[in-house]
Structures are given as structure tokens and as C-alpha cells.
Image (tube, rainbow, N blue to C red; front, side, top):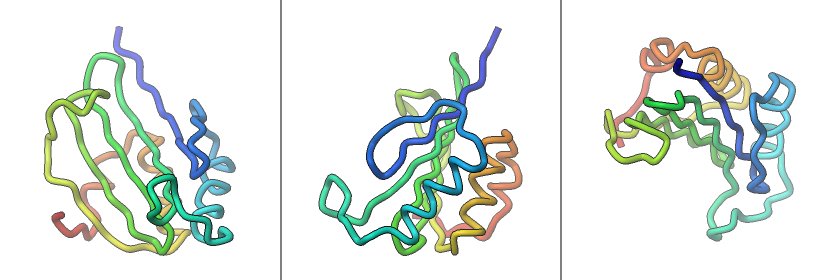
Length: 119
């Protein structure tokens, strides 16, 4: 049987399995309202929500300080085959939270229907 999973990786690099809506909101608050500390690579701090299945598809949505959002679709959690070009947009914290909630609820079609720009 295929098991679905959701993992949130916060700006501090720690993973939270099956995050609650409150945990999603807290991670976004840290990104949008944080103290300006750079991410590990020297760029803006980011948080990433991943949703996937043990034996298949994975979706990734990264939110960076300033509201830059990137959405990716992969054949598996090892990111071996991209199923679509990455999509980008800018959004405020409330819109980013809505996107993450849809991802956590497996509503990928709603995410695809948003006003994305091809990367």
C-alpha cells in the first residue's frame, strides 16, 4: 500500500513530520518576519514543505524571505526526474500559508491552477 507523507523543513533546517497548520504558520512567520539572518548558503532563509508517496511522486514548495515561492514536481523523493519545470511566484504570508495548506491536504490541482511563472 502506498503511504503519503508531509514534511516541513524550517529555516533552521529541522524537519517536522506531518506538521500542523500552526506549525506551518509559525515557519512562515519566521521567514516573513524573521530577524534577517541569512540562510545556510548565505542567501535568504527559506522553509520547504514536501508532500509525497513512499513509492512515487513528490511535490516541493519552498518559500523564501521576501515572499519568493518555488513549486516543483518530481517522480520521487530523490528528485530523479522533474515532472514539470519549476514554477515561481511572489506571495504574502497568508497566500503562502494557503498554498502550503493545499499541499498538505494533497490538493495539487489547486496549486497548479495558481498564477505561476515558469522558471
